[in-house]
Image (tube, rainbow, N blue to C red; front, side, top):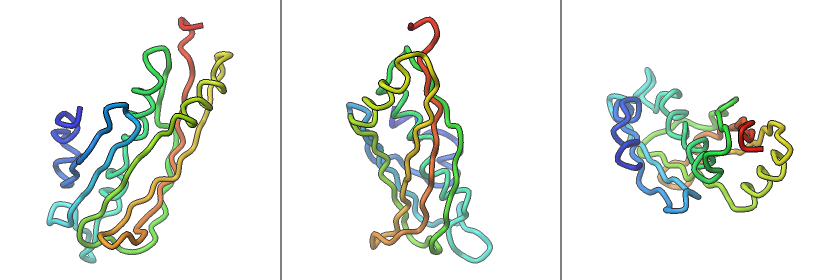
Length: 145
């Protein structure tokens, strides 16, 4: 999957690289150096590229962890730019066993669930460049009841 994501045109265009995907789909690590292709007018990372750094990894991890009996979609996102991104920026997207258990419990009766995560985009020194609040839509498929 890592090779497929690394070949995804929006990622290659922005210089986004998936550096690690956990075998159990609990974590994706991603980074993006500052290059001519993701530079904005003031010489820092373009905001759309900063968002692309963390999208759609959360949905992919939850889809993998929940399995084929569930519908998982990105529903909503909000990005809070904290400081200009320069150099290489990174993010680690994690989905814990406890979060998956909570989603399974919330969707057990066939209802939709809208879990939220806050993802961080960090600079080379670990400083906060942006936070992204992501909301997913998760529901058991009707045929899985």
